[in-house]
Image 1 (cartoon, rainbow, N blue to C red):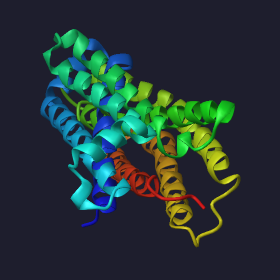
Image 2: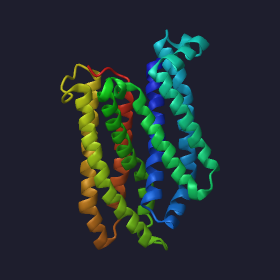
Image 3: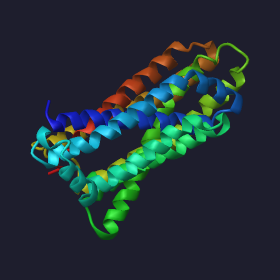
Image 4: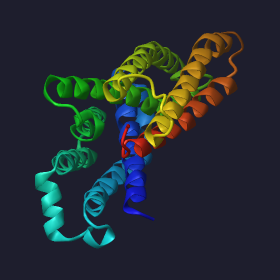
Length: 292
């Protein structure tokens, strides 16, 4: 395995973990009743802790991997002089310091009282997603265009992460629609997700189109570049996710109101989760490549 491949794997782990924390925590804080949020949060407790651990471990690994890529390979990975130079003299190193601070704060949320825990996780996970705009393609421009690109990229990360990350607690809440004392709260939470999902999807599509224009100046039509091939694949997967979300909202949700069948709703949500992981993997990959 080359350092480049290992870095893509670390980026995938980090992005998926932080997206899960951001989307699920923000959803439970903002759109779910306190009682239902506590029940779902308890069920997701170990998954959330595991995601924080993955975010921490992948962050620790990324600086040596970046050093190996900038240097002469694996032999430079832990060289103090090279690590120090990358950390203090590159945009990648400065972004890593912000990311490291953010992941420590995210980890500290396990010690917060329950009523502040989800909110703290949502805030620090959002900051971690925004830290990704400090390096990479979002930092490729200069002046006002760099600022605009970073703002747009931040909106894309937060809206996409809110949509994808919330799908996991939504899947748990769906199972509560047909039974238990929290049926009414579960129904309201699902409808709120559906409404907020319209906004999130619109922001994802608009900011994604703007990102493509800012990076490529047009559509990804030159498939001789791996970046543009993978970006095209990402666009296709996102389009499939949007189609599934529309079918879910306007076909299966009304059908559930009539016959209370959850199977089709659950299949749609699980499919969206799987496709979302594919999107995250593609972004982790082409985010390390030259666009043209």
